[in-house]
Image (cartoon, rainbow, N blue to C red; front, side, top):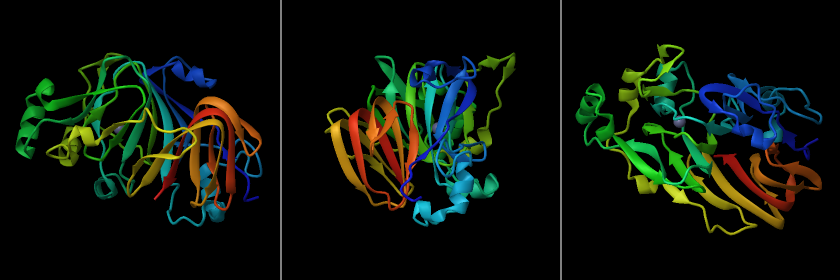
Length: 312
Ligand code: ZN
């Protein structure tokens, strides 16, 4: 039992800004406006079921509760991480997430949202909003109230293959044309600061100005500390992209063969490109699975780009 990988059925989320590029992963999309594919999640807003094996059909949240030893007895009420792929056909709203302390009090005990992105695809000469240019809380509020968005928002150029860490309190957005792989705390709390005055079926979407102002970090952290290129990372190696109190995330390019010892309580893994095998079993682009505790040696073969993560 404990040697079995947990493959998950993804959950699709339709969004006004979504598209249909997730078909590139062979996913059966429900519409042409799919913004997110939740690949590994036990969140109540999208609790993945297990695709096969002795837990087939069960929700990840149930497996988490019923078989704690599969997860090395990791201490947490809920599955702590959520991984998803985002297809932004058009720009997302400018937003910010709370940390654990704020979410606990103001969002009925939810986790905060720390997240990170690997840019799978984007247009050339594109940029993201990461942080802002206000020097004090007072200036931040003035800029928001005065709708001085150009001045306030900090645009940072990014490229395919970049990795970006977004701490709670960081004003951010994803631009149209991007496909992003996101690893985050298991939380679904987003405060929308500005939505370009777009109307969706004639309506402006709700903003959360008070909460946004409460949680925005001032001043913003140096943008160069949030973005790093992953080009030139060695194949057949777990290349650490970020490690913080919530997660460690690695990029792994398998060329022919790579094996390693799974010595963490559990590990998330997603195939972003290519195909191959894991311990003799076929896997390919779009597959998401969890490697349980005590799995032992993980043997990978083929040509694949994978992103792996663990909870810290
Ligand atoms: Zn976000």
